[in-house]
Length: 95
Image 1 (tube, rainbow, N blue to C red):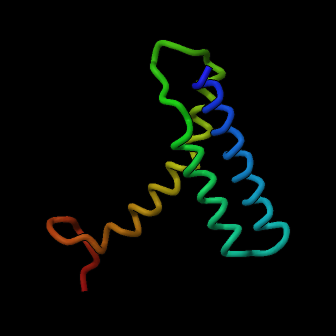
Image 2 (cartoon, rainbow, N blue to C red; image 1 turned 90 degrees about the horizontal axis):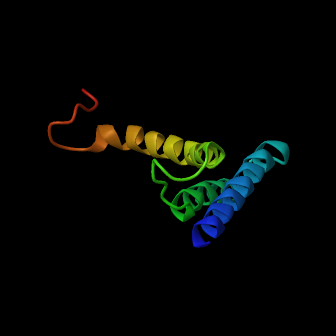
């Protein structure tokens, strides 16, 4: 029962994040709206219950995958931005 509630909340945060992204394009750019949209996608990822490979249906697995797409995109972008600034043996910007 609690997993269904968590999945519903994750879907609600995801839909709110999508609306906020639409609002960015429809009504003009705002840093507050963009920050709220990113926060909604991050909250949707962390509220979403963990899925086991054997339980659930295909529909729930598809919903789970769709909710994770924006979070994974945000994470990849942040890792790409921070990679040149890391020290050590990581390839960075050569001057």
